[in-house]
Length: 160
Image (cartoon, rainbow, N blue to C red; front, side):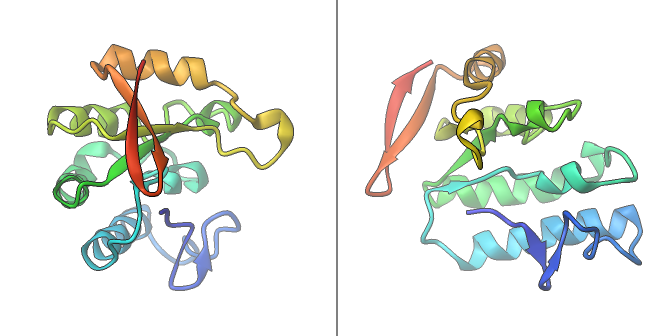
């Protein structure tokens, strides 16, 4: 499960961000995510949690400003027995951090959860499995020892 638009307004073309301050569109994005995890439960993994950063023309929005919302979101994800995804496409897009950022991954780890997948966001054959090994190394550096795949919405754990 992931969010690619809010109120039917896309991020990639700046429709959602247009006319809003950086604070408004970033916090609106996480408010939408919070409402989604509160109300929708038929998913396995919350994917690319900070996708908005890819399309933030104003630069990186401070993690500290959204940390409390992220904690609330992750606590619901964890209490529902769901996981999150490390999306390696951040390398392909030239972002300065992972997706989600290392701060979110570390927070998730410190909250005690270990249901995490690794995806390459492959929209073309040449993107398949791109940067997966680097993703595994990042997860190990945070302290994760396993990652998951899913079968019939049930996590299957694999050693990193």
